[in-house]
Length: 141
Image 1 (cartoon, one colour):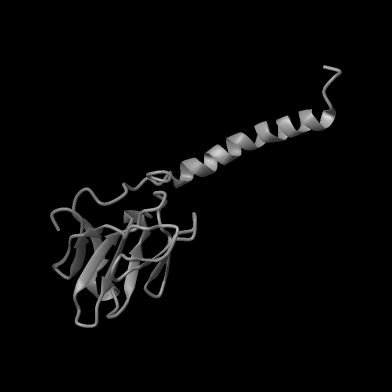
Image 2 (image 1 turned 180 degrees about the vertical axis):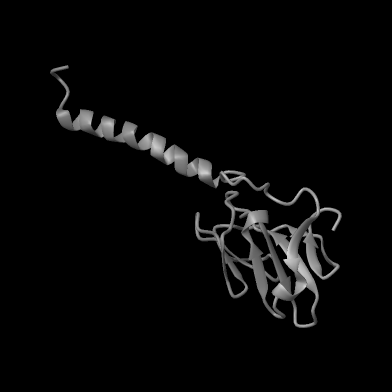
């Protein structure tokens, strides 16, 4: 079409080329985030030796989307590690701070509370117990 400038066509083509890439990024942040693991355990999950959870610390179990923390008195707490902002699986734990790589939300692994937005809701708490020296989390734990 002779009436259109090449800059206009270039702009349209560039936008069309970026659209599928942007869509892929959004899909990764949706519920499930492309992860094979369910958002939270649907049955009790054996997470390993109780001794692996340090007093006053936490351990991230990426394969099960769970974090388990232990307070100074030895009590355990478990939380889902699916970010409440956009459903991304959280894959990083520094000390007792969980960090979501998708949009920068951060959570306290000992309480599940948001410590940095954009998330506004805390992480869901999961039942957790010790059975035979092993940490078990999820429904029925």
